[in-house]
Length: 254
Image (cartoon, rainbow, N blue to C red; front, top):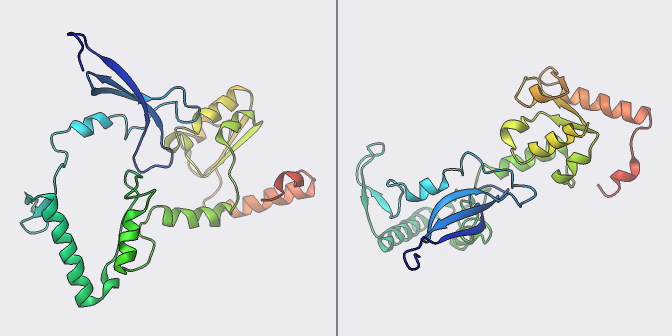
């Protein structure tokens, strides 16, 4: 708060709470206790290059006049957009009553959870209180979202299981291969390390049928035909084995 008429400026280091595993470090500037500026934390080695386009206007979201601060009950037909504000007690009571009615009439497995990690807090994500609630109700057991539940099997089938590399080690590489990923557009924290490697003399090879933003920045773009990734991968493995280019010791434990 103001002290003797002077404006008090403070900075607080925190982390982005949105549904993203990067958990970017950020710095919030407060003026008289009110957030007035948000930026990436330049001292963070991995996420300090900046915040994403979704988070840059985060302070605007929190102060927006249309931000929902109370529960709303629909009072018209679906699609009409007619709602009435109700209290939290009313909302919780109605939800609990409806869950009980469904369970009694159709069985508890008629309750079908669908949820995400939200702010990755104790209720939605880390603590999993929401999942424990559905377990206690005896609700249907399934993967309750279509995000990581679909991504992990796809990643495993594509790349196999095993530890990934440290992104901050990329600048030490002599060759960087980006296969089927548009890193410039989709991974803003990884791309600076790739650029650093290029500046130090590393060759960037991009394998992608499409001339993406990443491919246009590559030293070599292999525009293979769609669906031929497997053939190329097998050919590379055969070449490495034939000419003794595989470092067997580096793969121990993988």
